[in-house]
Length: 168
Image 1 (cartoon, rainbow, N blue to C red):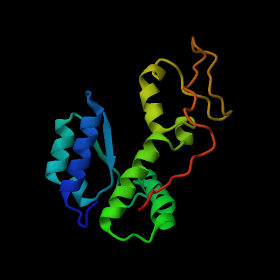
Image 2 (tube, one colour; image 1 turned 90 degrees about the vertical axis):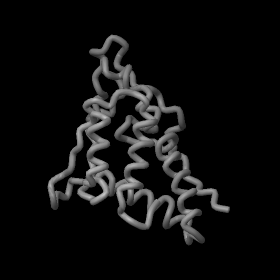
Image 3 (cartoon, helix red, strand yellow; image 1 turned 45 degrees about the horizontal axis):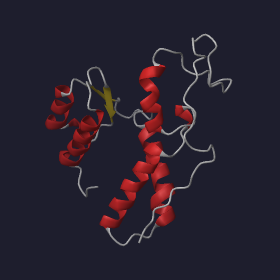
């Protein structure tokens, strides 16, 4: 978290993401809004150094950052508004780190076949050889794939686990 829009915070987050990937990022598309921190020379050079492709939506495009804004809305609803008032910035930072971990490892996402993003990403390389599920029928299988195209089963119960901020 930061009280300013300087490039350092965005660069730190980018470095953490690059480190976490631990693999070749050639061809990865990095999409961001037109915030000054994402358009800074140092930030755009780091994207190029990682051999990723920078993508910035057109000015005034309402779809430019729709996913991020949706996540921000859920973050505010599930954490900030539900568990406040907050006593300090440090308390919000710690709770935010817990929420992000929950979001990535336990929260079920319909766009990922009702599994957490970390589980979906872990299964992604193997899934490249089979077709995506037919979302129109809610099917999790594709009869044309050799193994039926089965997506990984959710590691968690389909009932969404609640996020607990565990504020002291």
